[in-house]
Image (cartoon, rainbow, N blue to C red):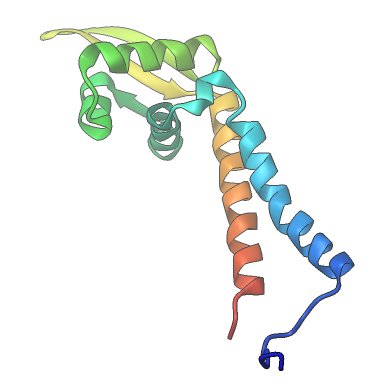
Length: 130
């Protein structure tokens, strides 16, 4: 005797559509991270922080990321080379200060990231049990 199943069943077409529909934003996110520069969580954190704050000094980014000076410098150089941020060195009484600013490309990447996360969140909410 087969056990009773209280769940609803779907035919393979419905199941395939649901899986494809839900995986589309995940694929978009994978494409966003396909850029070797944006594969790093530290660089993503820097882009998100600069998108919110527009510009930040090196020491504030050091505190935020928790990485060493050399590592942060490398991350900033890679983001700058990729066009996501702009670096400026300004003279101060205490010595030169490095300031990182978000660029249009960086803001666009941030907006795209938020849009993809929102799609994932919405698809998750629409399919959750109530």
